[in-house]
Image 1: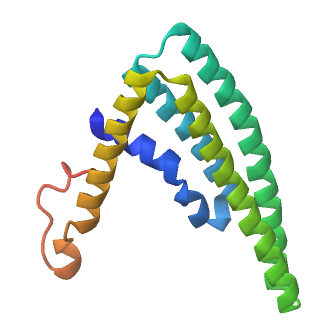
Image 2: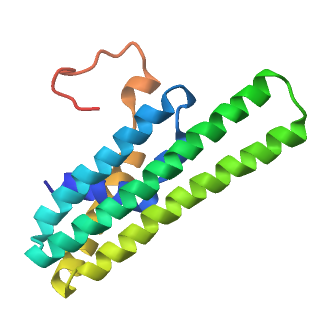
Image 3: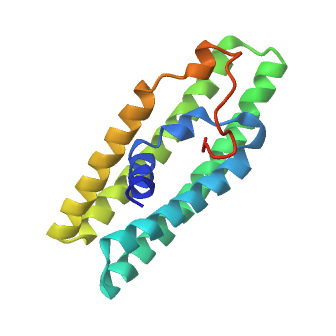
Length: 170
């Protein structure tokens, strides 16, 4: 449970997955991303035991943020299509660079929206809940670091047969 909550917090804070979007299914990714945020926010609200008033404020915040995110994701999709057309037609490199700047600016705006939502969410919480949220963040960072430093034995030795592949997750 703690790992799930920690994964949620780090994904919202970093939001780096937006920068690594697959161009072929942008819209599906955006929909999945917003749904993931909704589900993770619900999980975190259950873990922090939000009051009725806090839940209402969080719901309003989520609705406002989701509409803004959907608009930004839609414009990001349109700009990505334009960039792909420019590249396919071998247009002027300056035009391509300017389009890439537009896309990077949209991604920054998406990151800012998520960061603003996180700040507003923290304002809703009381002192105990904020301390619990910090603990969840800390646990998430530790698990991410451990995962990052864990050696992949199967990558270094591809002939090695995986142990209980049906049990392992990811």
